[in-house]
Image (cartoon, rainbow, N blue to C red; front, side, top):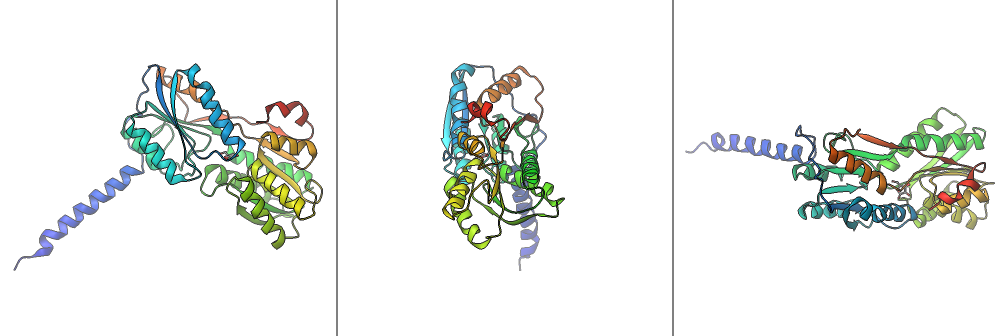
Length: 331
Ligand code: AHR
């Protein structure tokens, strides 16, 4: 009789080893140097947008369109319609088209990491803008050139400080979170929640995602107003959700800025108008204008300059004291 296990055991072991290596290769750093970026014009650049349902995203996309000819870029653009899976397949098709450079805001931290590794293997450098990926899955400076973006943790902390000041350290807070799994949502939550934690009379009574969208923010706020009538403050991770929440608060017969104090992040035109009218106490700026910065970084990278793993964007803070002179920066 044949001894099956003598043959099948090593075979199974080697199949497992191959599967593990494939999985590791798909989502972990390797030691190969980053791909170089050719000095050619036009440079074919893939820009994979996450969605186009708010002024922030539209301003970001426009900044890439505006910089393209100045930078010598021929830009291939896609829109993932709020789906991380679609953004992954958009990027895979850009890799298949052999773009020279990939620039994108990863919608979520984990699902977008493997395509960065795939791009590296295909010899295409990647620059992340606006949002980052999970650093245990893909590493800035090793698997991709750099992350250009704001410090979202600090934005959340500054929003918390604004709310602590406005409420004299006493509030029942509803937190409207951004898209689940996005670095902007994870870090803005961390920065805010950690700061609030050291103030015993500041209580987060509910925290729920509004997906960074105005109408979702409005609906979530509507429901939370009913289940938490004791609310006295709102922290929205972006202006669109804050504006949706303002509509819900008014519809419930309460006054934003009086009955319920609100803070938000972005600095859109709508956000700045809400600061001006007193409906928002503080709006922390988060710039969407990454086109020119990405162009500058790409040109430096082509020349062989050292690029830091994080090109940090600094943000202003808008409140009643400076909103008039800053209205022109709303988008
Ligand atoms: O990643 C940045 C956030 O995403 C902005 O605050 C928001 O408006 C956008 O959708």
